[in-house]
Amino acid sequence: MSERGGEPMVPARQPAPRPSDDDRARVVDRLRDAAGDGLITLEDLEDRLAAAYAADTLPALVPLTADLPDVEPVPIDAPVVPDDVAFRMHLTIYSLVIGMLVVIWAASGGGLPFWPLFPAAGWGVGLGAHWQVARLSAQRRNRRRSPRAQRDAEHHVLGASAPGIPAIAAGAPASEVPGPRFVVAMFVDVVGSTSLNEALGDERWVAVRRALRDQVTACAEAHGGWEVSTAGDGVLLRFPDPASAAAAATELLRRLERQRTGTGFAPSVRVGIHSGDAVEDGDDIIGNVVNLAARVTDAADPDEIVVTEHVADHLDGRHTTTGRGLHTLKGISRPRHLLALVWR
Picture 1 (cartoon, rainbow, N blue to C red):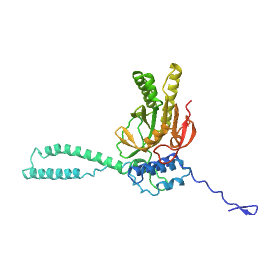
Picture 2 (cartoon, helix red, strand yellow):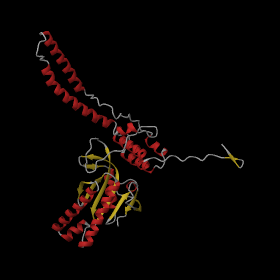
Picture 3 (cartoon, rainbow, N blue to C red):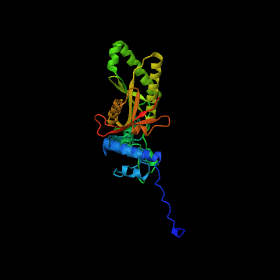
Picture 4 (cartoon, rainbow, N blue to C red):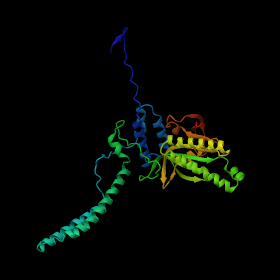
């Protein structure tokens, strides 16, 4: 320690390192896996995810997974060995029977042809098919036991293993892994649909609804999303990331505004977006993230896009938001900070 002016110079304290995107993603994914394994509740998961996304230093991520058991990483090049009782029994019986046939062949003089080869080959095809089925079953069990362990074998964060971020294929709502999966849910709801139906008449209203739904679907698909379900005059859509959902919502409202200017009429809509973990049930998604997205939609004004803070934090530079303050939403236990997406 050196001195200046008779006083010792104290070294400047180094700031805590900031987490990289990979650091944050691995912790977030570890939390999702823990929820899928039943180690934490979905409500606890949501709170921890919010804290992970808000963490501005690497040490701030440590407590979020400190109480979770370590996950044994699976080496990338590790062979998948079938661990199937039925297959092992099949292999044992095959070996004993073929061995016994070889003994009989040898005891009968061992001449040509080597006839045990024929049952061994035919039965061996069936044994090979059984091995392949057992191998695929072992792969599925490994994925359930240690989801996304490939990245975990490559990375090491905060002195503990944590799996990587999930890859969600845009436009393909399918998953082999049971349990919660990250989704971005967006609702589009028609404003004043009952009054419009009465004013337009049933036939024209059906045509207006169909045209609007076509526009909603086109905007979603243009940005990697797809329709999940409909309820009344509302449509639930799913997207791979918040920025894609925001882009689709912005494009939809701009299309409707151009239509309104050009033809004099286009229905007004409310749009709400929230992201989090949901459970897949076929093509449908179920969970608090869907319920919250619906309530966020209810809080929007006509021709407004409202998003939760979690969505706003992960938008790219194409999108800006304005604060709407804390809102108490029906059926939601705690107030939520909502923001309006600027689209004009």
